[in-house]
View (spheres, rainbow, N blue to C red):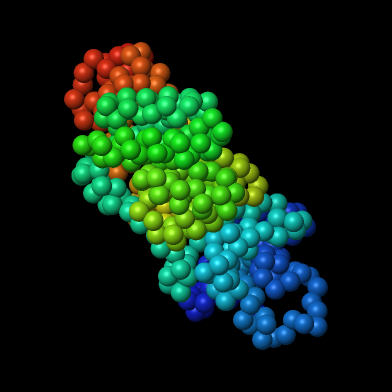
Length: 397
């Protein structure tokens, strides 16, 4: 019997909550059955000689709702329990988990839409995930910053610069007072700006500064190369790496398991392919944030309010709360500028990175002045650079 109430041994299951809409010839009962069977033991409708009662008992998903409550219902939330035993948590990890959670049900014509809304993990699974090595507390300790948001900067142009030109930019950003510098996700490892060349130059410079700075090197690529690149960054004295969503969620877990003294940044550009609420099939951004925290990222591009990306306030606040609960520092980026800093503090508190690209490098006075303007906005110590920025981009009150 696959239909249960919630009185199951939750240590034996991952509980996934879905919002499902069924097609006209189906209902939630049928969709739930198709998902539970199809994403565990076999074909939803055809049984075979190898499917023993013991196999079903141990390996089939369960539906945490009575069948009669789902019959004739066309849409609503359903919770499905996925047996912990079906996964090698040391090796299969998040990659295989997502294959189970968001896989074959999308090939079944009883589903009009299916969104993964939440996941609950038992302690028997959580123990395989390390969480952030540093997180909010470790970042603030490293930077010696107690309360204010971090002043973050993004390398622009995104690509095309030589290591020496990039170093000159970094010098201006550091002189302007930034705490966190992130290479753009487009950079990675092109021949004209190889990781081994630029990291050595920049890490040597940062190591000589009185003020600590986190510099996140973009190491996007296939997993084999990412894991080699994080070792390379560490060997050259780098203190952080940046990996984009498209490199695969499981790679964050693999990097964290190396247990290197490296800050790990999750960059989200591209996530809306699966997180946008307008899609019929997808995963809510909060779920990705929960997974990211479990896998051990220290910082993550959480979204933005008031910029050229302006997320719904409540949605962004929920994502930030999920991250804070896991000691992960959210970065607010995509149109951040000095005139938005205090408004975002009022909305979301001070535990975030104000991450800026265009409004630093596009400042009328150039990159140094742009970095100074952001520092002044965070410190509320306004000078001519801040005033120039407000004249250009405005002030949100």
